[in-house]
Image (cartoon, rainbow, N blue to C red; front, side, top):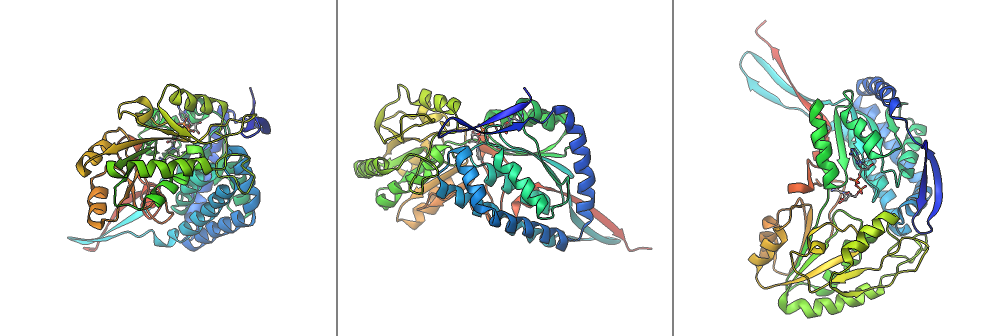
Length: 453
Ligand code: NAD
């Protein structure tokens, strides 16, 4: 097979057919990237900042086209896709300031001056998933370039279209040739070859925990740097003194957004027992009101799942699980699945423990704060979480006690361009976004300068 059919999940029709990258091309791609990287790193910080601003502007002037492409390829509602494109532009804008702010230290030493520099790693390989293709690519491409690296990006084979567009738009906006190359193909061939390639100094990966572990093992062969953003089974803790309307209605985005194909999905909701009934009543109304349908329709809140395979996996999780209620979904064609609430469900049930990556939430009751924290932490994952309460002291106490990288109080927000994002435990390694991401794309160099003549 030398071509790849890209499918539109809402219609099951072929959206585009792309040429697969031949693994044998990788050596040449990496060599070209290495040459481009040396020239790029030698440019002034101002030049690199301006180049990233030009990419941001180019994304904005292509925004509607990119949003429609993302919406059709992922099945993401168009309103959400527009937000994703705006977020990608904002990410480039934010990191455009970074080349001039890659600060080092001076350190008091005997006999001279000691200083540190943040040097680029060289050629960085990015491997990204299918759920937020443009968003997650921009989280890696923008800081990677800002730090002076060249990028070789392999998007998920289900959703490669906006990553390719990003490279084309960026190059047209003046980004030097060879600095951002997109490869098309499966993870087990081209992705693995990237992980093992001696000319690539780092892999920044977002995807499943199993593949993340495989990458960590293989990257060890060349001691590549790795950043891993992996799966989650995040908890929301809803106390009886919380704003139950907001806690329930927010789940439209927090667990059903992008059809639940969101690593930060609050797929376990623990509700303090006196509030359980009131919470479930509200949630039933919320779920019944979610508009599921054509992603390009302005009113749609939830589209299809990304693929037949993903739909089969999600259905297998729900089969035999205790469904309390579910919303509606179109029949087909398309990979549809209604928003679904599981309750009552045991903490040990596979649907309550494994990452489903679909529009499914498990609701549990709890009696004490300490018990809620223990149960929320009883998972191999540690990506995100929410605490809903009107007691400020409790909110901070619980936020500090939950083992996760991205916590929100009275909110389901997980991600901002300006703040660090990443997982505890098996949800990942390293941080993206904010200033922390720059650490992940640089090496610290220490230089001692003798003043003793
Ligand atoms: P996946 O792990 O199957 O694939 C991710 C990428 O890795 C794809 O580009 C794929 O082609 C590539 N790949 C697959 N096998 C590989 C291998 N052996 N070597 C190198 N590359 C390989 O994940 P997915 O199904 O695309 O995405 C869903 C997963 O991503 C979920 O588990 C989700 O939680 C996770 N995710 C995490 C975050 C985060 O920031 N923590 C964000 C989005 C998605």
